[in-house]
Length: 153
Image (cartoon, rainbow, N blue to C red; front, side):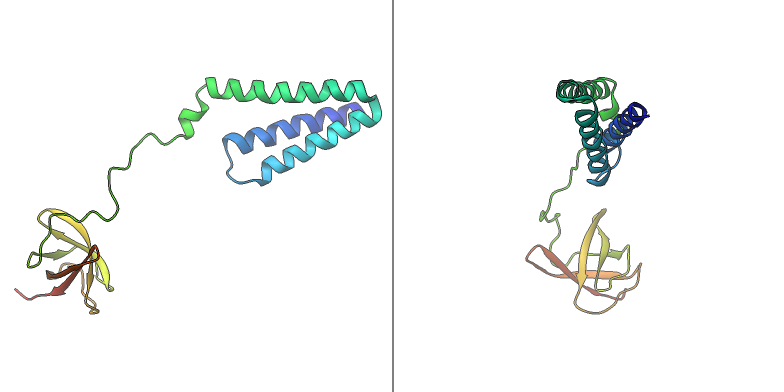
């Protein structure tokens, strides 16, 4: 009976640790897997003795390393890895100057987006609320922020 409990704890711990490494973010599943392994090792040391405990500890470490190597070589990382690059930059202003006009592609409450020179840019109104599709003019560019006001055509 004790042997079945120890084997079940080792398998459960391995499954939880591998879930932590390859599936779930955070700390909980890996911690639960580690607790299951430590309890299994404690029982092995207590019931079967020191030599068996040392062998079990070495075996668990080798088992974990082997599972990680197999998972990495099988391409698990490729399925969960991000394969695209971010092309945008922070604090880079587009080729916009004071006096350019365009229309809003979202409502300004007071921030939103506008289309100007075939570019979608983030803008800020001077406090007023502007609906989507309204024509606006760039009136000020300050501290990497583009300020606009609504105009009527």
